[in-house]
Amino acid sequence: MLAIGLMSGTSLDGVDAALVETDGEALVRPIAFRTEAYSDTARAELAEATALALTFDRPRASPPIVAAGDLIVRTHAMVVQKLLRDAGVEAAAVDVIGFHGQTVAHRPDRGWTWQIGDGQALADATAIVTVSDFRSADVAAGGQGAPLIPVYHAALAADLEKPVAILNLGGVANITFIGTDGALVAFDTGPANGLIDSWMEAETGQRYDANGQMAASGQVEPTVLDTMMDNGWFDLAPPKSLDRNDFTIQPAQGLSAADGAATLTAFTAQTVARALDHLPERPRQLLVAGGGRHNATMLAMIAAATGLTPEPTDALGWDGDALEAQGFAYMAVRRLRERAISFPGTTGVPEATTGGVVHRPLAG
Image (cartoon, rainbow, N blue to C red; front, side):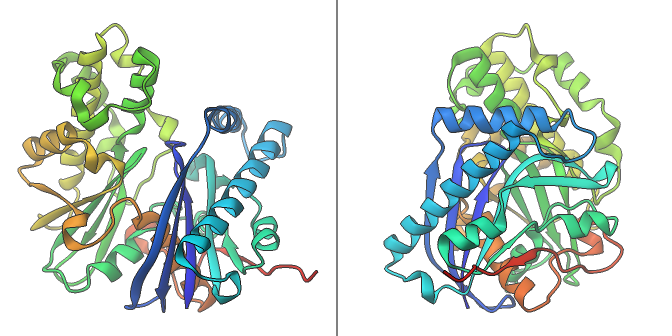
């Protein structure tokens, strides 16, 4: 089947779109990928919606959040058109879109997770069957609703020597562990780029720390790092998940821009090291995807903290920027075929669960 996956992460950088051919099992053939950056205005609108959503005790309609959801649909429909143009593929040839939407709040402890973006509206705008709301069924069944990509990681890593771990460094970091026996364990490890991006924007006006240059020029403040690591969440056994806003840059306030960047980068590295202690076996290989793999300082700190050499997935021919979008295309096909996308070892759901709501475009 031809499938498009769409991912807009908590970093609010933009929309990633991937076109793949897959059977939702072992066959995965990437065809095209593109990313579309959000404008500053769009980022501000989405950030406002997220801040508002986090004040609610449950999801509910609110004009700024409704408007942000409309923005998500418009932007994603445009990206689908551009992706298909790039690939030279007609919309009619595509079987399904996997539409993650935009997470504005993730509260599995309260029994809900909230991704905005109307799947039916996207199906109508693109004339392609669309699967959305991938996480809610898992949370309703008692799972964390995240991470979901491990089922795709497992398909990609089928021929790799085990045990192996795949670390995704997005706004939040998550790890997928595939054991010698093929067993999956996955969970969020802590902040990845999210806090560093927030720090850079607050202190320098820059969107992120390019290649970790700011962090490399600073010194880690041990007292601040110890304070941030002194959080019982890191001792919880997996599966477990986070909202990007569960941690803040507040402990680093008062440090220089460089020292704050260094300390927050070291925080990410230390949380990855702590996460490895929860794995059933020590992985032979630590593969790294997501935007953080471009941060040389972060990778060096992870190597120092873990004793493993983080290897960008690109060395295996896996586009580390595209994996999440590809994963939602893969899961959309699994949803159409009633195959599970989350498992007890990945989200803590009691039994393997098929998530996602199917929307078929309205005629005319």
